[in-house]
Length: 121
Image (cartoon, rainbow, N blue to C red):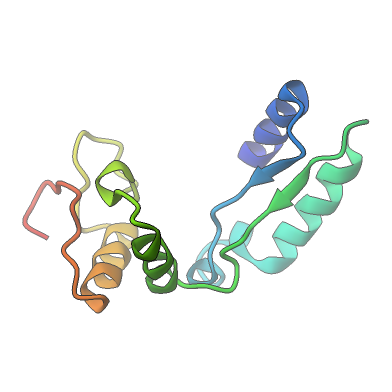
């Protein structure tokens, strides 16, 4: 909520009409701020909190990581330039829930994750 609020404040200063939020369907049970109800309420607040309404867009709310990955692969995204891990170190850990979910998504598509990991993932 705090990060979305900061992003909304920044959007107002640069004249952007929306903040894009990467919450996805696989996180609803794990993270309360990824539930559709939360995103709907934040969107409503951000539209009225300033004189310049800012929408909160969450295009992946109905998709899991595997489905999101499939879309990115179709677009030819360079996944070596993306980060999922929560460890905050130079390399992804390959063990936290987010890394495991990412690796499973790549495996489900028969693709090797190009991200460097601390351990063989």
